[in-house]
Length: 193
Image 1 (tube, rainbow, N blue to C red):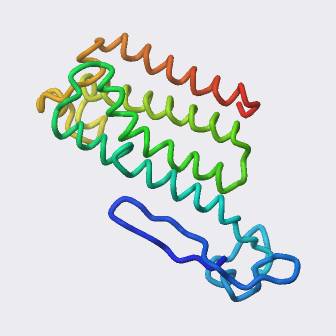
Image 2 (cartoon, rainbow, N blue to C red; image 1 turned 180 degrees about the horizontal axis):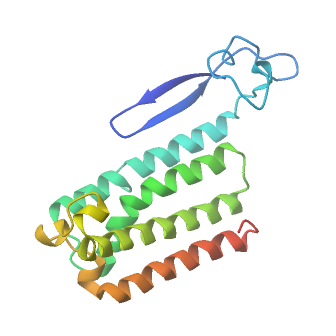
Image 3 (cartoon, rainbow, N blue to C red; image 1 turned 90 degrees about the horizontal axis):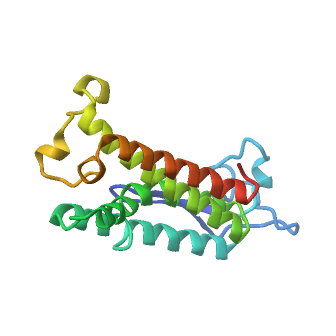
């Protein structure tokens, strides 16, 4: 239906709102299509997503942004309580993981994917996010400022826990490869990879 943007410091979401529909269930021209035209469908051909999908998507986004997600991860990061490898993984699954998982899962939900497909995409995004963070940690130790586009060695200078600090550089790379293999396997198991 008609969409209004809800935005915050790190979130921008288009939420469907009630709109006019034709007798066939299609959104009426001018009620939302003129603001959000669909290149694949005519303006009057853009169906509004079902309310249950929208509510599920909002719930996923709220969890990803909240205490179980990014807010919780930031709290762990700021208070320095990630003092072992398990706690570090939890931290990264909440921060980077939530930033990758939420949009991946939201896309699947809004597309009307089956629960098993959504779960596979979630598992893929979870492991991809963790691999990303592990490699980011490795590059912070081994990379140069010029190559990274940011100051290398900041994590160590701040005393932040990293995968290389717990495991070493090469074992951390192997962990990242394992994460990528699990991510691919999650999609393949659902016939997506």
